[in-house]
Length: 47
Image (cartoon, rainbow, N blue to C red; front, top):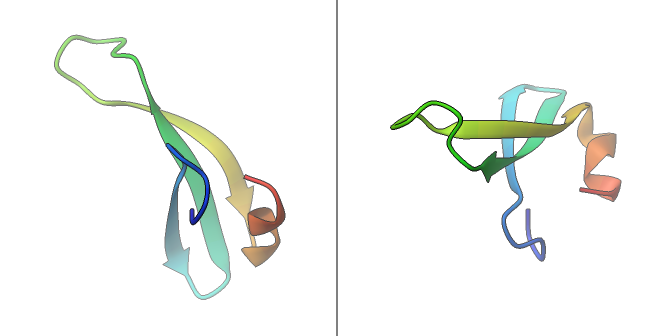
């Protein structure tokens, strides 16, 4: 997301969005993703 360090966004359908960040490894060698908000475009009001 613009202006939010460490917060990323993704789109998977015309009206579906999600924001996420990366956390410390839980399983060695695998990324740990923290889902922050999932929903419509309205989620971008607050990361």
